[in-house]
Each structure stands twice: as structure tokens, then as C-alpha cells.
Length: 487
Image (cartoon, rainbow, N blue to C red; front, top):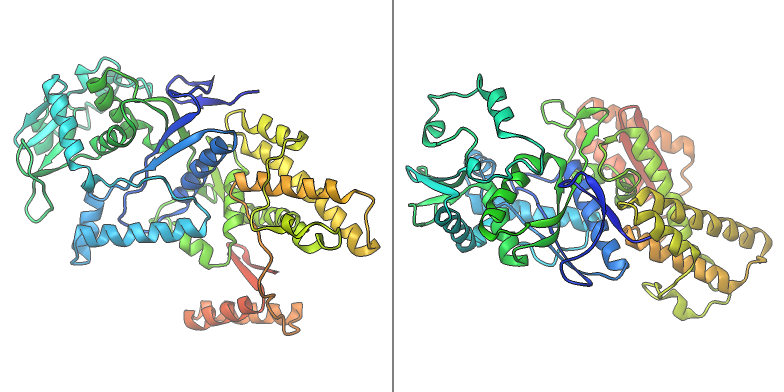
């Protein structure tokens, strides 16, 4: 079976072929840097990280670009609130992004273009659109004339006439921006400068770019007219990705991307995540409360990437337990390799030689079906459980009937496949000292911590959590209380 993927543009699953043989040009719409990344960002970044890893695993040379939107109303609002500047806010949250992604094991993109670093490309694209009759200036702004692009709506399936009928009662004809437009759904390519806001010189006067034009320009500048994969969250299909298509294809006359891929959204306990509901969880909040980053990756990979997922205490506990199983399998060689008289070279930092066997083929057969990572995980779990069984036999009987060579291949296969999903484990350099803490003592400390939290004594709460952590006890806070595990 060869790789086939669901294309949002055509609404069907298609065999994957690339513009240039053996090479993949891939662009992921990144984050707007005005706050810390949340669970939704975690899911998207993990999904596209693993898609990239898998494409490389099956032999493609992947050029992966991810942008930062570093000029935006939300960034400017945060800067005003802090009496700071757009540049300071953006830089802070870009660095925070890299910190969070490093903790999650996300491989860095080949390049991270920023909107503010692509101003020449943005202005050139707007000029081309204006020259071809797809854009028009209006009192210092420049708008895209959506009616001029016959295929507008082809990605989202929306029709302008239906949108206009549905919006007729909501349009405020007195609105200043509305009065600048020739048609209600025309969107801004360039915005005239406002007092106190950053602005750039342009043929249309001082101002800054609209959001949608940024990605079109960055794709064009970094990857060319047509790319293989354009990825992002399902919430970007309309209007962002729809507008990208309209902007880019109006100028080039070529497809912007041959495959449009979108990951599903994240809910928390069945509800949309939002600050107003009090269920907004950042990546660092989640990891700081003791959830293993590998369990977060596993939680994401256990769901079909296009479907919504629900973040619950039970779901993260299941992922944590699942990770313990895989981790035990990944540590098999370090724990039993000497007993099996493996060569020391088998225990190098990344023991992933080129292997072809039935497990590799089963994994590829599953994942080739629209990046079916849950199907690939089934192969990984089976390998891990086999190695755990063999490890128990070695511990209790001193030897195993399975040959050392066969076990070595199974272990290396597990490490190879788990690495495709970004799941890695190494032996602890120092085993945490338990100091003889019994389960009862652990529960007593957890009760003391709960009392401290209830009294809003968060310093004491954190002290107890850190005390337990130094003794190898990880706490997982949830709606139904605090769970813990050793190791």
C-alpha cells in the first residue's frame, strides 16, 4: 500500500504524489505570538511534527516551514496592556513557544519566517494582485475583491451568495471599514496606519499587512508557487486558508497546495476550551503539574488526527498508563542487553538501524491509510508488551527461550517505530531515592497539599509537590482529585 491522505480541498482520500520526485514541500500555519501556547497548539504541533517524521521515515526529503504571526491586533492589545511594544511581546512568546515545543519533543522546522521579516514579499504580492485586477485601494487600505476570483469558496464549500444572504441582517452599513469596501466580504490586504501602532512604508501609504496575505507571501518566498502540503487546524479552513488560495492562485494561476490537511480541535471535558469557561490549559501548565510530555504525545496520537479530541482526566490517565507500557518496552535493551550478551554497540544513543520486517510493514500499512497513527500505535504496543513479557521471564527464570538476536531486532524495531511518533525513553541517570515512603505516607502528603491549595497557600502546595517529585513521585491533578505514580 502506498500513502494516501484525505484532502480537504477535494473532500476525498487521494494517493500522495509530490511536485518533485522524492521531495515534500510542507507549510504549517503557525501561532500568533501574544500568549503561551495551549492544548490546541500542542495537538496541531504534535500532529504535523509526526506527519513530517513519517514522511521522512518512508524516504522523503521534507522541507518543513512554519511561520510566526508577529504583527496582529491581539499582540498590539497585549503590548498596550503591559505598556510594552509589539516586538517585545512577540519575542517573549516566540521564545516561550520554543521552550514548550522542546519539552514536547517537537523537532524544529527548517525555517520560521515572520510576518515582519517578509514585508517586501507581502507588498510585492499585493502589488501583483492590484495589477491583475484582484485588489483595490481604498483610503489607505487595500482590499481583495472576492467576486473577482471565480473559485472563491472551493476549499470551505461556501458560496458568496449564501454567505451574503446569511449576513444581510448583521452588516453594519455605518461601520467605517464596511464603507471602504466594494463588497461586504472583501478582506484587507493592507491596513492604513493607526496612531501609536507600528507601520511600514508602502505604495499605498504607511500601514501594516492583513493576516491572510502574510502566509501567502511566506509560502511563495520560501517554497515557491505550488507546495505539496499546506497544514493547519480545522478552524483555519475559513476564512484564512480560503483567502490564501484566492490571493496566491489569482497571481500565479497555479494551485497553492496540492493537498490541504487539517487537524481536529481540542475540547476539555466535552466543552470548547476558553478562558471564560475556566478550562483554558496552556502546555506549560499541563507539564508543570506532572503530566509526562510523552503521555501528551501519546494522547494526541491515540486519536484520528482529523477528528476532535476531548481532553479529560481519564483520557490523560489512559495515555499516561499507555506511555508506561511503551516506555518499559523501550528500556528493555538497557535493562537486559548485557544478560543477553548483546554487543555494546547495540546500546548506542540511537539504536535505529535500517530494519525491514513484518512489524515495520504492518506499521507502514496502517499509517499509509491517511496517517492512521492509532493503527501504527497498535503495532508499537504489541512489540512493547512482547518485550515486557520476555523481560519478566529473564528476571524470574534467568533466561528466555527466544534468541538474543530476535529480541535485539524486536527492541530496535520498537525504538525505530516509536521514534517516528516522537516517543523516546532513556535510562535514568540517577534513580530517585524513595527514602522508604510508603503509600500511606504519600497519601498523607497529598492530603496536606490539598489542604494548602484549599487555603490558597500555593507556595506550600508547590513545596509538597516538589518534595514528592524529588522522591520519584509524580502527581497528576484532575477534576476528580490527584492521582500519583512512582518513577
